[in-house]
Image 1 (cartoon, rainbow over the protein chains, first blue to last red):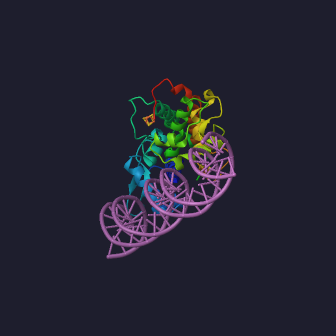
Image 2: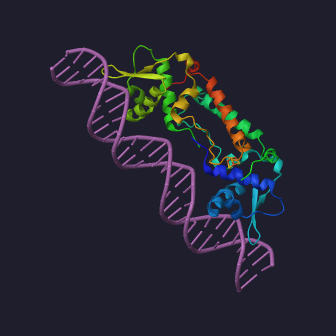
Image 3: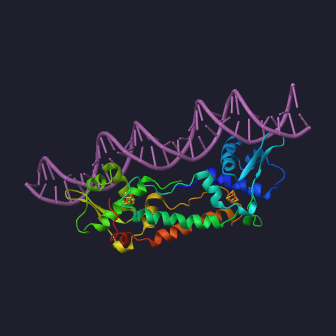
Length: 132
Length: 132
DNA sequence: TCATTCAAAGACTTTACATATCCATAATAT
DNA sequence: ATATTATGGATATGTAAAGTCTTTGAATGA
Ligand code: SF4
Ligand code: SF4
């Protein structure tokens, strides 16, 4: 189990959009070029962020993507959930009693990770030198 | 990103071995049947646990698998690492400065999860009713 | 000694999903 | 109108998980 590359792209793109001027949208060409990924593929990923309500897209000349919310509210978990989905990392088809202790351990572990990702805000990384 | 089914099988198998008598090895047929998985496939998974030093295998008639360590020492993390590997969940090819803040956040989140999985011992589940 | 029982290991197939690419369509600025 | 830009569908490719098959080798016990 690994985080997908799509999540990596989404995180870096969001970091760029947070640091960019909110007035001027950034084209997917720019966003893609700096990450070494094809624009069409990145576009598909960003559409998921649009649907999650984190960014908005502007069609036409001088269009692109920009934040649609307050940048201070955007957490790592928001982005990861938008890309990877919100399903539990440990899935079991059976239901052996309503409190399965194996699932309880696994889900609690996941919660610990999510709790940290929810506290980590994108805007906190700006002063630090995370580029590309 | 999801935990693999192999991890699910490994956890359940280990739980059975912990609750079984340590003297008598349990055949892979038994272990596989109760989980609805093919014996040959489960055998491949268990070989990884053998190589990790958690269980041992006995060939020949009346053979099978049994614990090779004190059952109190076996944690969820041990099993998960043996199956999924120990590589970081978030991988990035580049190295932008020795302290990348994106990776710092992701790796710290992973640590939180691992910390919980390291505290969770298999033997603690025995009195609770986790079966199959 | 010999047949039986069991795990280990390698080759292989199948399935699922991530990672793209291509193209047609729609929206918008100039 | 025309150029520019995102969207969405279809499709292709790659890769890892999931599972099967078969051979080999180790231990038992008859
Ligand atoms: S014991 Fe829990 S994890 Fe295991 S099969 Fe039952 S419900 Fe699923
Ligand atoms: S900023 Fe960090 S995560 Fe992003 S490409 Fe550089 S090293 Fe990798």
